[in-house]
Structure formats: structure tokens, C-alpha cells
Length: 394
Image 1: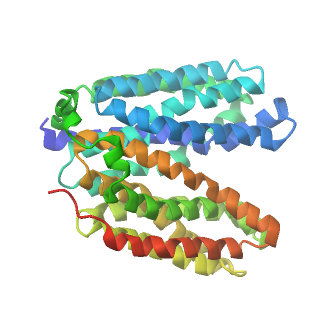
Image 2 (image 1 turned 90 degrees about the horizontal axis):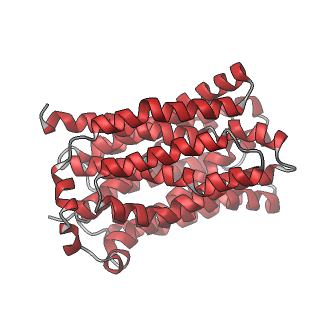
């Protein structure tokens, strides 16, 4: 098979590994949380700390993992990630205290997320594609949303059938060993041309870390994407509570499903547009979607307006990964993509404060409207700053 065709096999593979990692470790967390609260914890906050640990350590590992991806063979990187994932679930099934779960979500699981998740997937796609890169990244990033739909349904069924979260952990261990590891070994047997360059050490002639983090090509996208991601997280994770406040508690699940479906559409849409329009226009479109959503959610919207608003939130949120990847991929050497994207993901970890900010504002004001106004105010200077986004490298 020619490289022209094989690169789409790579896209399909990255869709799978992102679905597995994000689908099980992020989207299925709420399903594991219930039995953990009953068995180990005195409060919900004790269990919610687990997912916070995962996100914080994931962000901290990003720059180191990205640097390794620019120097080592990516098949080796992913196989280490699969090993961390499998060992993590094998040990999770044996956990007898909450501190042991804390330890796993602060070590093996964030390592698995960073070594076999979005960062390595975007690095793979960027190395294999010079043309149609935006479309490929958009398709690849659909894996996170597909995993967010498929694995919660599968894990919920496993829990209902077995009645044991430990059995589910064993099943996920088997999934890694029987499916993901062999698939990785077979699909990543072929190296992209740019991966050969990366392994030769040619990336050492590129940008230094200091040059990256002080460049307009890094600072302007980060300054623009942080408020967009902040807003998306604030709405997405407070959506159930917000719907309940408006008397639509029975409709919350449907709203989350609408958001997830819209995210898939957003990823494909922004990925396809990235190959045709200027990158600042992509950001302005996503930010525009989010501003419309904030406007529609303010006050006490009726169901049709809530559906429309949540659809816009999903479209904007779905665009974040493709926009981020194409902007960075076009402005830094492909041999340094992993390193730079690791720094980007570390910077974007600030956006994890979005849900906390929205909840804190609601506790003080009894309404999410002031938080919506705050996020809209943060988006305005970000939109303006993108005027000065440097052009792509020639």
C-alpha cells in the first residue's frame, strides 16, 4: 500500500486509540465514581479529586512526552502508553483503598493518556499529512467523541451484567492486551518520512523551548484558545445542573447527547475548513458559535433555545482540537510538533478551572448569567488578538 493510502490507515488507528483512552478514562469516570463512593469514600469530593489528579498530571507530562515523541520512534511511545493503561486497570481491579486509586490516577493513567491519546495521535497525523492535514486531524479527533458515546454505554452494560467494577477493570485490561497492543504493533510498523527525520536528530536545529514560548505563533493561539476552552468546559460540565435549575432535569441527558453529536460535526467541519480558509477565520467562527451560545443560555431559555445553544457549544468545542493542531502544525517544524503541542496542552490545562469558576459564581449569585457574561468578556480580546496571528511557515 502506498503512503498516500496508508496515511488514512493511520488516521483510523488514531481514532481508535483516542476512543479507548478518552472514552474509558474520562467519559466513564462517572460510572466508576458511584461504586467507589459507596465502597471507599465519605464524600463525593474525595472521589472527584481522582479525576482532577488525572487532568493535572496529564498537563504536567505533556511537554516531556512531546519532547520524547520528537526523538523516539512513535510505535515505542504508544506501546509504553498501552502498557501503562493495561497495568493501571490490572492494578485498579485489585485496589482495596481509595489512596491506591489516587496513586493510579496520578501515575499510570495520565501517562497512558499522554502516550496513547490525543497528543500522540495529532503528532502521527501531522507527520503523515502535508496536504489535507486539517481534514485528517478533524477525522482523527472524532475518536474522543466516539469513545465518549460508545464506551459509557459499554461500561454501563458491563456493570449491569457483572455487578462489579473490578470485573470491568479486568475487561479493559484485556481490551488493551488483546486489541490495542497488537493493533499498535501492526499499524505503526511503517514510519512516516518526517518520523525518520525526527529520529535523526534534525529537530535540534529548530526552535528552542524559550523561542517557542516567547513567540507570537505560540502566545497568540494560546491566549485565544484558553478562554474558548474555559467557556466550553464551564458549560459542558455544568449542563446537567443548569438544566435541573430550569426545571428540565429529565432533559439533561438529551442535552449532553446533543452536545456530543455536535462536537463530532464540529471536528469534521473545522478540520475540512482548515484546508481551505485562514486559521484566524476558523477561530473567529468557533468563538462566534460560543458567543451565540452564551447569549442564548442567559436568562431562562425555553427548551428549543437550550437545544440550539447546546448545539452551538458542541460545534465550538469540537473545533478546539482541529484548530489547535492546524495552527501549531503550520507554524512550527513538523519534527518539533510533539514538543510544541505538549507545551500547548500544558498551557490549556488552565481551562480546567472553567467548571469551578462557573460553579463558584453560581454559589455566590444564584445564577450562571454572571459567569456567562464573564466568559463572553474574555472571548472578545481573544478574538481581537487573532488579527495578529503570524502566517504559516513557508
